[in-house]
Amino acid sequence: MIYRKILLIDDDDDDQEIFLTALQKVLPEVVCDMSGSACSAIELLKSGQLFPDIIFLDLNMPIMNGQQFLSEIKKNAGLKDIPVVVISTSSHPQTIQLAKNTGAKDFITKPDKFDDLVNILAALLA
Image 1 (tube, helix red, strand yellow):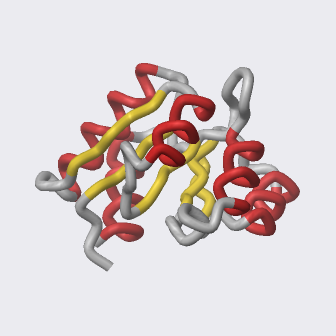
Image 2: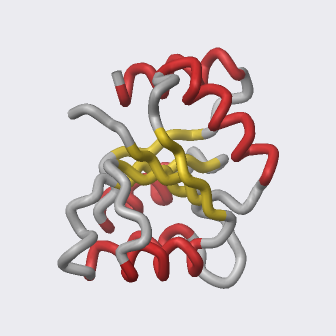
């Protein structure tokens, strides 16, 4: 699949900036919308203001966490087919399995090195 529009949902500004910089190295022409809140993102998606080709989703966020977002989006007929890749600091097997059971296409543990993130995104998106 060719990815032209990506949505990143992550409440950490530094993580957003790192992700965007890595993404631009892999797919410089892609449009990446960002949301610091799963609640805001779900409303934008449901209203049709956003319709990405793929969503990258952090799990640890206030109010609505990533797991709750994933459950919500997979219940919505108009949104359920958008692939969601969880990107989290967690590497716990139960967390990964729960995300996949809820409908995540893939699960990425946030790497410590920038180049590792670039390589992961290249493998997923290119």
